[in-house]
Length: 83
Image (cartoon, rainbow, N blue to C red; front, side):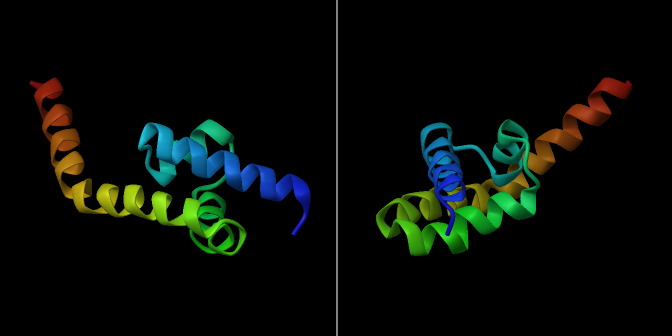
C-alpha cells in the first residue's frame, strides 16, 4: 500500500476515535466519499493497524446502534421547523 494512503487511513481512524464522528461526517472532513472512508477504516485499517481498527470498530458499532435515534431527532426537527 502506498505511504500516502496509509497516512490518510491513520488520520481518518484517529479522527473517528477522537470525535466519535460517523463515516459520513468523517468523509466530509477529509473530502472523500463515504465509500472510500468506510473501506479505509474497516478493511484497509484492519491490515495496517489492528489495535487501532478495534478502537474504530467500537465507535462505528456505537454509531450504528444509535442511528435510529439520530434519524428520529432529525425528522422531528424537520417537521417542527415547518410549523
